[in-house]
Image 1 (cartoon, rainbow, N blue to C red):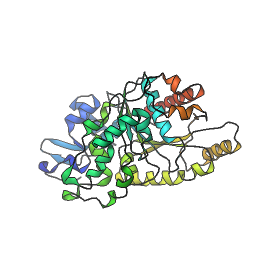
Image 2: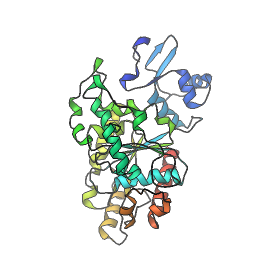
Image 3: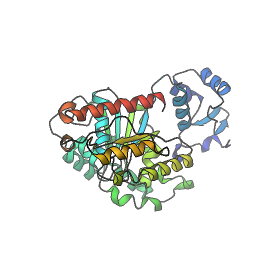
Image 4: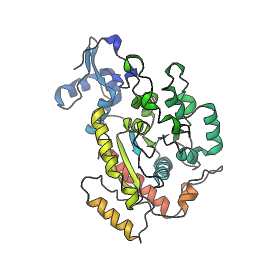
Length: 360
């Protein structure tokens, strides 16, 4: 256990600290209940320090323990990343369709965090005109990461950047967005050399966590659309995530990098001391009559070193391209994802939610 002085405890380290009162509020129980857990539960998180006012814990450790043990009296926010090293596999379409399905069909409060410099999720949810205005004003996540290079001149404003009630799906009224920017292309290569900050507190993988941690609990689920790489910006997305999915076309080129993703995320999870579990591999653009697609899915399922392949597949269809284009007028989710496509995304959302709630 680390011994520190009360005045030195800071949220700037990227690890938010909570006391007994805050733990009780998170769990929806009394202080005495928390005290009982500390005595009776051998796996209850150890405090990082003991102050005169009581023990101090890492908030992330408490959240993870509450989720594992189903102790919380209030629903815990689920944070998942979507990631693949190969472009064009339907990663972003899956991200947005899940967000819209969770909102429109399941009534969930959703936050989409677009970390991909291609900005496709952002354009799908708010359209090009609105994105251009935000980008011109510096109200995108690029500003957050640009501030790391010039910490004495910080301009990122999460209130101005957070876009409320996005999507052109009429019933998807509970989706918020932190938009991306093409400027992230230049930023991501410079983050490794960003200034370390006072007391070396400016860890570049903590930038997103610091910005959003006070907002996360406003949502039922947060979906992070990661870039097609394993660089620092992707690590920022994984840093706040409890789980991740790997959308992929079931062919050899698209699935080639999956072992690297799994190994890298596992190593990162171990390094930061927090669990980031794979929910599974999602087969996208699936063609039932393709021998290659069927054989690759069988191979993925038989590889015990890889995450499970989710039961739901997203079938190939012409409607996918039309769904990616933001419409100025609102439409129903069935109009945006007609026929089998809408059913596939609904089944996938149900499968993911069931796995998250069961603790898998």
